[in-house]
Image 1: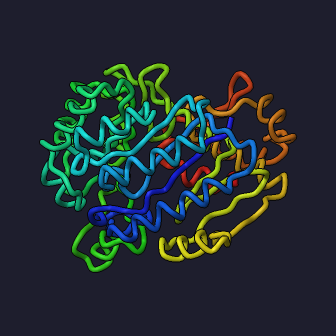
Image 2: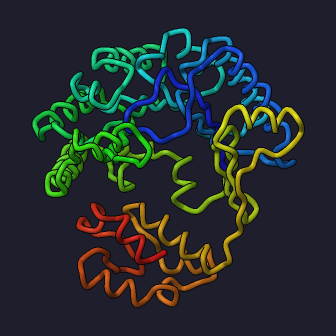
Length: 371
């Protein structure tokens, strides 16, 4: 079944590491965005009925309650009653009891809380708009309001953060016991303030050796706490894997709405303009807001499916891959797979290809060989 993604392009302020598209949430711009979103949702293909919905950003909970309620109403009105998983991202600094209850009443049944760290020094370094105390309070608020599928986002590899500090973060997570944990390595994305500071010599990235040690620490601690490591950076209690993200990793179909949102639908990939003003102008004038559209040839699409499927720790079945794509992955990339096996990056057994522990940490390099 397909998924629906909604990009809410507003934040209190930009975090130093973030390259996702967002702007300040000015009231007039928010209203124009919601009008444009209503037009885009109304123009979705007839018969489109998503199994999953994901509201991300940006920061959806930066919206005032009335705007958030309207957003939820628009989504519910278009998505219908067949949605199995409806996720919404939340920020500890902007989540209130009123907003939490509003989300639940609208039909949201999964909330992902952007904590990143429970260390106030690390949070200041990242430019987060909340404190460690606010993060823990926000999570407890979700539980008090009745959220039974709550996720927490964490980061490792933050310069100046020791393994002991990361261990304290992981202990806090284990004590809170969310159903899902996304734990990402900090990336210095080009064009961000953090990358500019690195280039100016004011900040240094954590050495690879220490990053690997922290990644292994994350895997061990969360595994001991009962979480299954099911994707490179994602861990879940059994049965609480994010169904919407599994669409991305399984080469499923989805439609994204809002500025900068991407879609994979009907054999095409396309994305909206990365500018909320231009997006609103286009939608409210009855024009498409697409910045690009492309169609991959079947072989290129199969290679992409191979790479995305390998993000999951279960890997990819040779038989299922052939049924899904019409290609044998060994016919596509047999030589590259053999070389990766020889270097210990992938393993093949029982008709399945998967990343090894060594390959997990350098997965981008592995994927570059296969795509």
